Length: 47
View (cartoon, rainbow, N blue to C red):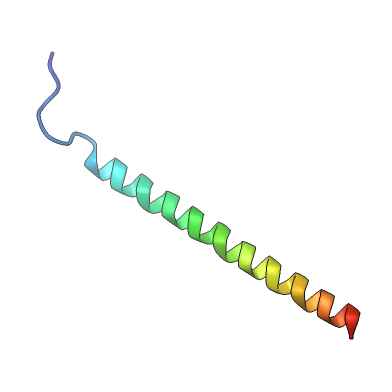
């Protein structure tokens, strides 16, 4: 049986893209937070 024309699983793709974007943004935010914490620790150790 041939597949129907058009986008079959568009909703799934949209949900997946949204979730992956959330994951990516969370990673970036955690990375920035970690860098700031390290800077604060280094600054405290120097001063």
